[in-house]
Amino acid sequence: MEGQITVTYAILCDDDVNIDLDIQALLANEKVQKLIKSEFAKGARNLVIDAADTTGAIHLSKEKQLHSFVIAKDDFADALSLAEEDARGKKLFKGKCGRIELIDLRTE
Picture 1 (cartoon, rainbow, N blue to C red):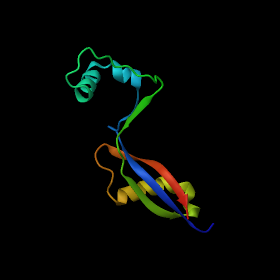
Picture 2: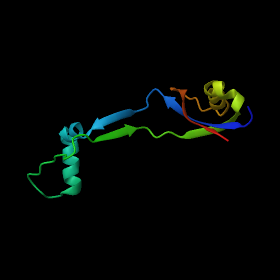
Picture 3: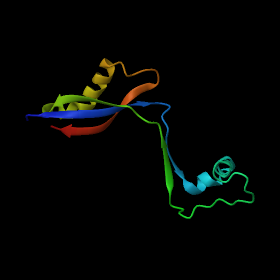
Picture 4: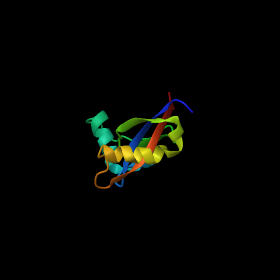
């Protein structure tokens, strides 16, 4: 096969956060309620906070920097190991950050 593949990856760490928070659970927290009231309704009393849409969720995750490199289409099966080698070459593995997540494989 001729051509190239642009591989985009992110470095994963042990302390990464990736949580989905339910709106109802979030609003049940007293600290969150107090913060919302003080930010959006200063001086008002006897306020009740309720969510009309109970299916809503908030996704909380650590922002990742994306890294890219180019491989030949013949190396498609080795994309993960080549990404790990690229990360080692760029000295991206530090401390508790030693894993790779493939984000995108784009043919050119």
